[in-house]
Length: 309
Length: 198
Image (cartoon, rainbow over all chains, first blue to last red; front, side, top):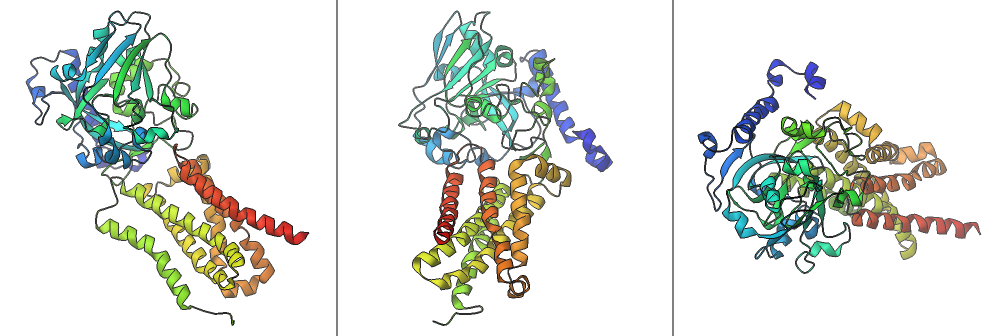
């Protein structure tokens, strides 16, 4: 991306904020994932608010305003307009809440959300890139997905992880519209799910997740378009075959199983080359894997990303 | 009844009403009330008002006929011109505030994105109608020539609706509502035409 624009830019413009920011992330990733989490004092900043968590991964980009993060959501179970979830998601009962782990695993089980909340929580400041062409920076709080997966001891034949959102017609006014097939389902390949970046978020901005953001527990896979980060999860299953995913079912040509952020592969109806960061005026170039190439590009080595979009 | 001419009170009222949506947007801008994604709000609102006024313009002839109120026809020009105004602002907002003069991206959008291709085609056709919406132009073209040129609206409005339909991600309800209304309004014309032919 930078190469394409380089001739137009002055030295000042080129001082690449993206790369500067990513360098910090890469360092954080090295510390967090390579050297072990304990004892890295700089990362041990406690997040104030209801949840205490250790900050393990971040970008220095300015987080998007809380009001925008919690007021502009795609959560079709509560309506297709992005202003609807904040109005109607309060109807969702989030306690008691359990997540069922099942499928090809040695220890199928049901995990209570309270158990997860009592564990060690981490804060991760990630970019979120929506397939519609806008993006945010969100300070999530959660548990690495890998930790939850390990509880169930998936069998070696389990190659995929399937996720399912709660389906509560009485609480979700949007599910009477059969726009998508309910319940909402998503999936990852096992190695994607085990990647350290994949997070099960239970909070944001230091507090419990608001309902419209997918309370009480939702996936966050920051190198993929936002719709992969399934909300209000009730079930995680291990499968040998690629599980169905909601948007792919709706329009297979437009939304692939992988749906990695990729500025070179356009949505059939619109360009993915740039994005509008909420709160900013000018569009900014979209980065490969949403800027997380150093963390995840190896997962797709040798794959034709135009074919596996 | 003698035909009314010029800028009569009813025309002034129509112009005032047509200005309200854009004034409302300006008001919301100064109140900081355009939402989380203000640029999207502005582009979409200008576009949807352009389409609404185009559809309204298309409805005037059938309405005038069915209600036997011929004077309604005089509203077509201000409504049509305001529709052109909103569509122009819609396009300008896309070029200036959405893409910020990224001509390479805009050009590739026009070529590659069907919804933008159709939208641009509708705009280019609409320019000709706007430029000939003056008495002098009608005189120059002659009544028949002018009428034939302005039948382009039967192509422009469906193109506008198609533009809308294709850009919506999943919930096609509103685009379908517009499509249905347009189908009725154009269907009425076909029916009239067939009836007169017999």
